[in-house]
Image (cartoon, rainbow, N blue to C red; front, side, top):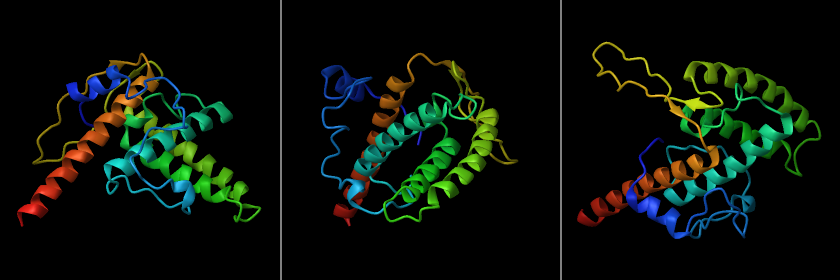
Length: 196
């Protein structure tokens, strides 16, 4: 999910088409005709299979929910760090927890479903703490999660620690990068399909 920002993407931000650190008048970014998942029953999110438009919607939906979760429960950065979005293990856990929450608080859910969610939330907090500790991300700085190199594999580049200045601005850039990478894959797939 991690990619790099291009000059084109930064131009979008500077042109005002994309608001960094601001509110969207309609409650979210323009997702180009993607059906609002609020109109569909909650489903697990497989981040590997999302289209660019689906990913953009899911990223912003998850961002809003994670911020609300952090604030509602007073969660420290040892559970939810500011750069959680840059760590796949945290994204998968928080995404699953979000889907579980949506199902637990659905009007058709069992009256005991919120209690079950809170029990599972306690387990998830323990896993989140472990992954945050392993990844090395903190309140004020972040580095990519270290990946163990197996015999015969090329070692990854050394992980460089960066200072965290504005988590929300970084999130917006991260989403632009992810969506752009997905669009490039979609364009290549369409080109291959046209050529065959």
